[in-house]
Length: 225
Image (spheres, rainbow, N blue to C red):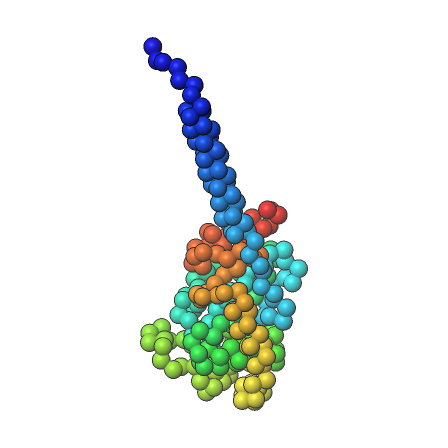
């Protein structure tokens, strides 16, 4: 038989342990909520004035922060982008926008300036030029200097709807520099550190090459959750 011991000291110890347990539980609960909030309250980049593909009234917006000098962006555009367009853009569920990133310095800036100049000249020609410029990126030694005005005009000359004389003038005069600077500011404001960075209605996809994750984020938004 155990001897009963209801001393004040023992009672105080028990009360203290209960309080500690309750505090620990509250910390765990609050910690879980903070993680959940972090995952769901990212801000959606504005696509006003940005090159956008798809129905302007599509319920879901997918944004790519990309760099024409980035080899990973080229791979994403070749392997993931066509699936996204086929599954969601062409079906009217998603509109897609591209925001320039200048991580590779002057060549990134020149490529972005050219793309924005094409968009200003003829928005319908933008995506064809966008695709062609990425295609022109060397598969090997991509760090070599390949983005030049001459190369840009060579790429543009293969697209009948682009006036290369006007494009050359726009590049030389930096007519679209405000658009390029606007994108650079957005990259800073959103803390973009990697390219490509894919954002679905404000949710940043952890692995841009995980198409299933992109689809799940889109489907979640389509269901209104």
